[in-house]
Structures are given as C-alpha cells and as structure tokens.
Image (cartoon, rainbow, N blue to C red; front, side):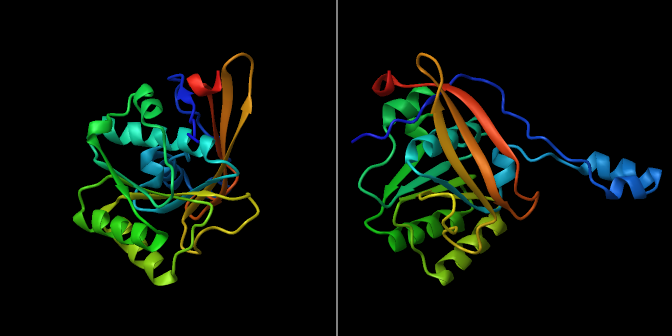
Length: 225
C-alpha cells in the first residue's frame, strides 16, 4: 500500500511562538542588544536540524513524510545533496515527492535490508561530508545499538549535516536513542474538501527546549481525494 504524503500549498514556514528570556530583564543594555541580535526563534527549517540527530515520529507515516519533504525541498533549493535511506518494505511515493517540487534525479535513495545496514549507509554518507540532509526511514521497528548512534551523531555534528530518523510510534514511546537532539511527533487532521492540517509537536529539543510546533495546511494527493 502506498503511503500518501500531502502536497504543500506553498504557505510560508510557520514561526513558532517565542517566550521572552527572563535574563533579558536583568541584563544591562549592551548585553540585551547582544542577546537580541543573536537569538533565533525555533522554526521548522533545515538550519534548525543542521548538525543534529533528529527523530520525526508519527502514529502513521503520512504526516511525517509531508513535513520531511519540506526539509528535502529546502535542502535542494540551497544546493545541498540529500540522501534517503529506507530500511523497510515501502517508502515514499515518488510522484507525490515530485508534485511538491523535489528533484528526484538529485535525490540519492538507498534501500537497506535491515536497520543496522541503514545506519552503516547513513554513516558512509555522513563521512563523505557532501550531504546537507540524510534521512533514515526506519518505520515501526527502529532499533539501533548505542555505538551506532554515537558514530552517527559525531559525523552529523562534524559536517553540520541534518540527520533525521523517521519512525512510526505513539508520542508517549521513548525516542529511538537518548542521543536524539530533537524529537517531533507529527499528525494530520482533515479540513474541508481536500485540505489537511499537518502538525509537528516538538517533544524534545536540547537547544531551544520542547513545546514549540509547526503547522501547515496541505492539499491531499490523488490517493486521498
């Protein structure tokens, strides 16, 4: 069965609400100016995931694929090569990826027979230093030994590559690794006609803290209309 991600309506990236840092009330004027100039609100963008090990989970893969496609498209627009490693029986539906503007001819897709092989493939891509985004589409049975996680995290940080793991699980289940720096749980709800609301809730973020999110209104592909 094909997994149908939703088609982006080219809406701008949603900006996450940012709470005011309490330290700004105590700092002097020069320090306030410095902090204000360097503070960056968390957003669903490639730069937020760069150099980190992220996990995108969902009860079903559809919403995850839709929001990950946004990052793939952003990377390609910036001229960054993208690697997509699938360690499962089925993966994204290529026509849907093409519909949102992804250049399939520039997307390196690798099939791995099991999860550890997917990790080895990801490590090879990361070590090359040539990829801006590497995705491991692992599905519901994502299990990796700690030493594999550690190597992947080190390579992602060294080359400032965004490393994402797509999993299928409930939001209350633990992350695929304690080394995951950012964990988002995604879901979708139907709107009117062929419109759907895709949402990512950030459950874990070691840089900005959890609690922020991202929402897009998308059009369903032919399989959902």
